[in-house]
Length: 205
Image (tube, rainbow, N blue to C red; front, side, top):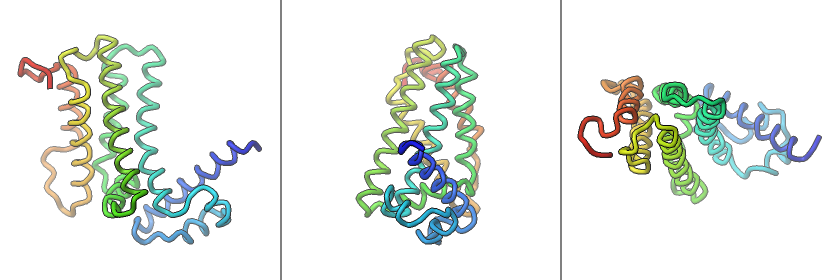
């Protein structure tokens, strides 16, 4: 087996194991030893790639974002030049953000409480920047193919959408929080802005 294949397999096993443990125990209760025991990997194999469980958590956090982007770009690559098909992939991701048991949501809330760790702080910044970047790229792709109006200011709108999805995820962790504006509403709101540009205001966002 080639070294890169071995690396990918190890990372995949670490992530899958960690997500299983998050669902069972929550982020705070997991120890690195739990990951070692459940994964069946040696400490040497694990510490060759990561120094702490927080680094694995960062991988878990980033995974959903990249999966959404891959699904979106796959729709584009298949020649889908409509708004609905690629947007559906984004909607599916938004719906998961409302689930408090979702491993990615749990990891985000956990890492937000660990920002004193320089590695975590940098990872959170990169995650936010990447979220805005991909959102902007999706919007610009739609504009390029004529399904999103040019009046939509891509970078400004991408930042707003990223803020709103983060808020949705944080609210999901608040016990018994009254959810009036739900994930479906957010999906429809985003679709409305991207389909109509200024949402009736006569100017870009």
